[in-house]
Image (cartoon, rainbow, N blue to C red; front, side, top):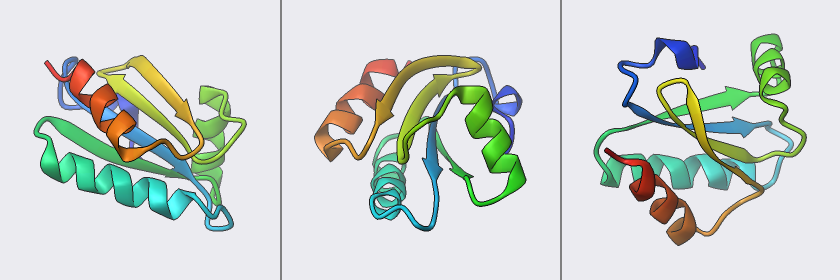
Length: 100
């Protein structure tokens, strides 16, 4: 995934999607995130795969208990967290709210 701390700037918006291959909604969450970052400028998509050690450690650091979980960051700051698969419109509205 890459560290949130390595974001391009303090104002960059990052959508982190925590996933696992056994999760039925995770693929849809990643696809939804990918579509929105293509449509909206200024957002990076980061996927955190819980099937490897790095992903598990990151999930533990973030307190992830359910997947999929999507977290919107501005720089290092967590702005919003969505647990489960949100409606695309709700995710889009949330992303737009935090775009500078």
